[in-house]
Image (tube, rainbow, N blue to C red):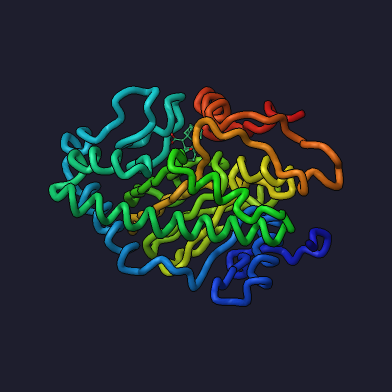
Length: 314
Ligand code: GA4
């Protein structure tokens, strides 16, 4: 893993993983990208294009509805972050120039919520459920490749957390309308708390990742690819080998951007600790063992931009 001989990273040479490549190359390159940047692009994945486009269409038709209709799908209380949101992110005053749907990935939740989201709830549920299954499979495949590339014996040590039927994974559909000036904050700087996040968008850019202090890199739009972010939990599970990547979204004046992000999370009760192989060479865990539920509680007590893992160090 080359950290010293870094080529300066720019929008044109972001790490790209071709999933059709040889498996051993793929796992090596993913580990290297996660280690250096906590971020990479995936091409030639198996998520069917029509499934992606159908979810996007569902998103566009929902966000085009009148506000009073969208409010039907809004959160029921500040303690419940799920549902429709407009400009408010979390309950502590973070703002962004967007509208969004934040959904649990459980089919029963999707079925119930689809009644307030769509005029054709069964079409909405089946479209979204198909998409969730496909991106969950992609996330699990990537987590297995990561385990392989890190020489962890149990290849499903990370993916098993996401495959758990009680996994707390989320789907977020973000709609950024054109703003009166370029480069307003669409979604402010933060790291994702889960293991891996998998993002795709329409053909409108706006996403930026932070590679070094104050060095923001614009990520070009590519509707055929997924962008993958290392989250805080994968930082803990790799005992700090990977660091969760900070990112944000800026707006533009001309076209609406729509992104869909799947956040692969453990179940609330899952306890988060690195597998023994990854305790070497330091010989101990950098973080104390905690549950995803405990982390989530902390998460929602702090603002979007917080660096939350500091409070979980050993
Ligand atoms: C950032 C990543 C995901 O979008 C999210 C966000 C969550 C929310 O919108 O409810 C949080 C944010 C995210 C981190 C800090 C807290 C919680 C808003 C916020 C201010 C769904 C998540 O899991 O954490």
